[in-house]
Amino acid sequence: MKIVVCIKQVPDTVDVKIDPKTGNLIREGLPVIINPDDKVGIEAALSIKEQIGGTVTVISMGPPQADVALREALAMGCDEAILVSGREFGGSDTYATSGILAAAIKKFGHFDLLITGRQAIDGDTAQVGPQLGEKLHIPQVSYVEEIKEVAEDHLIVKRQFEDGYHIIKIKTPCLLTAIGELAKPRYMTVDGVMDAYDKEVKIYGFDDLKDDLELDMIGTKGSPTNVYQSFPKQLKAPGTVLKDMTDDEYVNAIMTKLEEKHVI
Image (cartoon, rainbow, N blue to C red; front, side, top):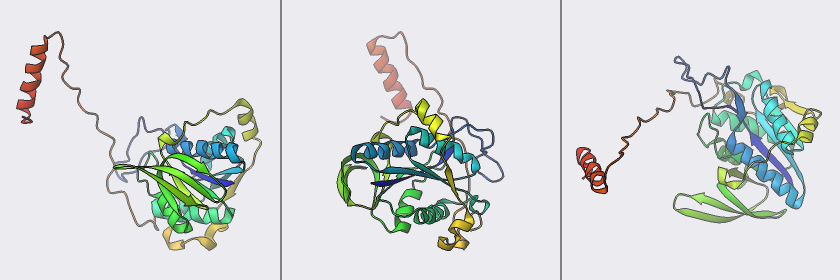
């Protein structure tokens, strides 16, 4: 089975800063990681490869520095890596990004399974995976929590949903978006790290993909959405801690607070 996994190198969002003029994340100086949901997708792909055989190719769109994320994926056990990079792609929103990645996957050629993470922690839109499936005209299942059965012509997956779960049989080629419960990513091995830096990371630039692109729908100028406002998550004030009281005093204190808040 030929499996393709799309990954994104993202800033570690523990300590983020926002450009007050543009509303965009200030990425310079921030440590970067493979997006967590994407890393889960890598593990799922490697597990399928170990189960029925095949190859795993990892693709990332980003600046040249994204080579580091791709080599980490190679060190985990992926077979090939492709970096989609070009100044023309800078500032692309989800629609533009999915179009560029779709062109890159078409250039790559035949595949049986495409896996993306549910969403990236620097955007949290959960849009690129489903948009990619639409642009490649393949069936898709989002929010995949478990892969129950894998065959060359189909998969059976468990999908997390608002009111429960769906068990879905899907024909290949298809796309899955992975959530954290799907797998626990493995660690890189020492041999894997050594081998990863001996392997070639292929580069797909603008000239390689332009024949399959909507040229007026790439980059910042071609993106139909723009950032209106960004702000870091606000921490909640610490709650009131009750100590050294009797059971009745605890109950009375809680009831008083609920009455003050007009809950009761």
